Amino acid sequence: MPQKKQVTQVQPFLDKDTETWSYVVYDREGGSAAVVDAVLNYDAASGRTSNRGAEEIVSFIRRKRLVLEWMLETHAHADHLSGAPFLKSQLGGRIAIGEQICQVQEIFRKVFNLEREFLADGSQFDHLFKDGEIFQLGALEARVIYTPGHTPADMVWLIGDALFVGDTLFMPDVGSARCDFPGGDASQLYHSARKILGLREEIRMFVCHDYPPKGKRGYQCETTVGIQRRDNIHLREGVSEAEFVEIRNKRDADLAMPKLIIPSVQVNIRAGQLPPAEPNGAVYLKVPLNQL
Image 1 (cartoon, rainbow, N blue to C red):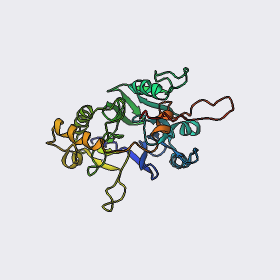
Image 2: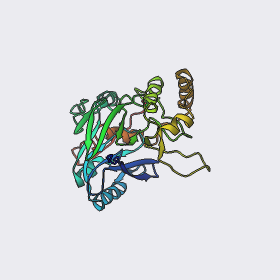
Image 3: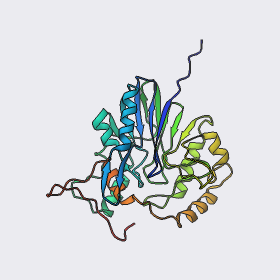
Image 4: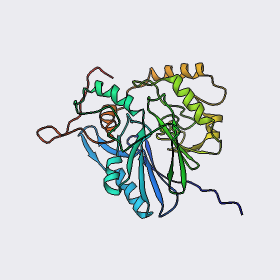
């Protein structure tokens, strides 16, 4: 008899404050798990952090008796702080990102004039994945796909039959990610998207954010490669590179900076760790004036 195809188990978690989807990805109950793009709750008015959302993920993993092997970051997010260090402290595992994070660290080390001890070499992470690298998550085979454009360091994770695209693509009626951050490039994003949309049409696709058109639908996180090919408002079949670049650049010119970009980037290029404490024992984040 033919062997039954392994189906990737995916449990989404929505942080409504930042409209971010995090995922627990696993092969079976009692098996191996990864968490994609975990969130650390942050109140900008008070400067206080909370593990509220990450604690829900921990509870789910324990309830399913899973072994957490990886905390995977699709990129250094500019709209939420990473909850990966809290998950690691509770459940173990390794924090990983794409090897091009070093480019992003170099850019923002200068923007924030970080301490001389901060190294732009990716050493803050437990593992730096290379494009095309293959790894196992229990019974599931996982592959790393490099997808620059939104930032120079975006990676997509294909785990079994589930694809986690970060900010490269959104739901079809929302389109694509902005490309106006330092190191972003709309032409690169176009080619990255075409690489993703060249995969098998039945592959399930999970987005990192959803910004539902007002009054039209609720939050969604899952689509397929085939549906994106047909319906994505920015990147459906037939849209040329020149057309996409014009659409993307025009839209980016009208977008405000994400509300949490300043705290998020400082923390996320450190693999979610906070900056070192000052001599008084307190931790501070910098606000660079007129830089972003």
